[in-house]
Image 1 (cartoon, one colour):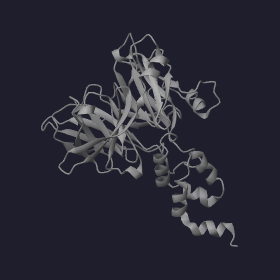
Image 2: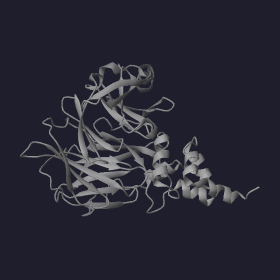
Image 3: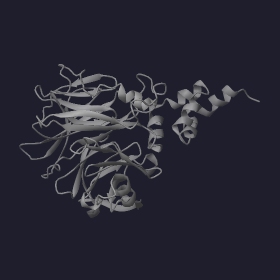
Image 4: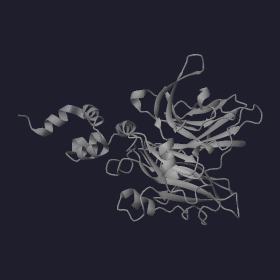
Length: 386
């Protein structure tokens, strides 16, 4: 019988990764990498870790809780950041420990004074995109590690939107997009900055007279950022791979509903965009593909059971939930976060389990699910992208 080590080496990294990507859980992958050094080396591939995460969206990345931007009644233009962890601070879980150890007052930001002088623009993969209200400089801050990367002032004219693109496999890699309206042509322009260069570049433009919808936030899927346009009929997309804009028609069913993109993984194809919404207290997933004529062909591919009864029982039996709109806040780590009036809910998309979340002081706040990068550090050591 041949020794075990030569057999493993004969398999090669590519074949090992094809085996590893089919393991049922991230815990199984971690146990496999502990078997021998060739297994660990194969699993440390940045491309493989991204692929594995996409096949296990409910467990990668790690979800710590949700971030609230609470208004200051004395100074409405300033919002206070507050993290509500999914696990209590006393919990022994790593998520609770990480959340309780973070500096969400942002006292580590340049210039001191915490986040008072900084405007919150976006949040993704444990990092915040911020803009200094005085100097107009930008920063990407990580409250868990208390690290901050200062970014130069954007040369854009009339800015209409921002987006932070973050790869969940590598906590040091990010991209920032600044949307502006060109004064001469009226085009929407994209200014792009990457963590590798830290300088702005005007990379794309699109003829679009429609502004972003009021309160529109950047959404991420398929290595692209998306913004909803005013009127609800179309959505603006920017690909960080091709550096190109596109305008996407939305299906009539989604034009008056809130939604969030869902990254279905490599097996579904990057050319298909999936949008998750809540209609009639049922989760619906719509798939859109290019129709060849510059438009989008949409079809509803999934529809869940109805959650109205259980929502009413969990929130307040005396409250008629039909009186208040049900909004999809965001989909993160395989969980959809919902808000209805002063109630917050989460639904695990893998098992369709609904939870009511703490809603004290949340009625007037903006809510962002707060996730941090997966995998653990020994699979993603410093300098190893994922």
